[in-house]
Amino acid sequence: AMYGAFVLTGVVEEKSSRVVEVLLARVTPRHLLAGKILGIGVLGLAQVAAIVAGAAVALRLTDDGAIEIPEISLGLVALLLLWFVLGFAFYSTAYGALGALASRTEDAQSATGPLTAVLIGGYFFVFITVAGEGSDWIVRLATLLPLTAPMAVPMRAATGELPVWEGATAVVLMVIAIYGMIKLAGRMYSVAVLKTGAKVGIREALRATSDV
Image 1 (cartoon, one colour):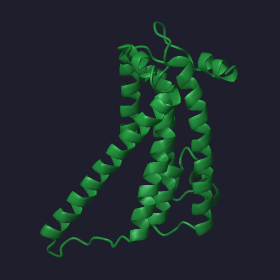
Image 2: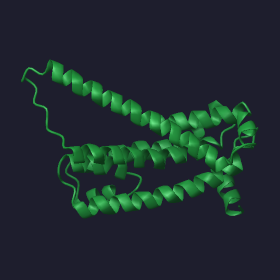
Image 3: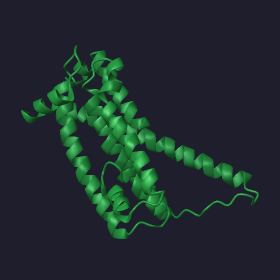
């Protein structure tokens, strides 16, 4: 959510300052959005890695045996990184597309309000069902649904309750969802990023993408 907001802010600032018009003279709208997402994603991974490394060093230096630290396998670490990347790719692409609908920074929050609500609602849904005593089918739904999979899969994997087939299926469905989001966001971004003045509505942008 935090790094997706960075993508959102960058898109809105470039649009409101008209810098995007200069950039689009050299690159296509889709490549511009993809470059922004990739750059911020690499920054996010670097910051997460720095936090993890700092925490690991601090625990080693201060461990006096009073705190039990669970062992974490390299496989689980790799899975966590994978789902950070997948979740970021999905949500940040959506943030970038919706950011293009706003002409000013003040309009950005309202433009992305529905997406933020979905993200927060998905987090609490996963916390209540997966971390709690949710029904098996609800837990499986949270695992396979791309909106909640980035939060549900790592949580289930960390507790050792994730079947291999569910984890593999969740990855495949997430990759398909990211591909669809990239295509939709690229069209929305292309349509809306050069429209200044009044805020472009989501329905207007979607109707325009159907004509592209």
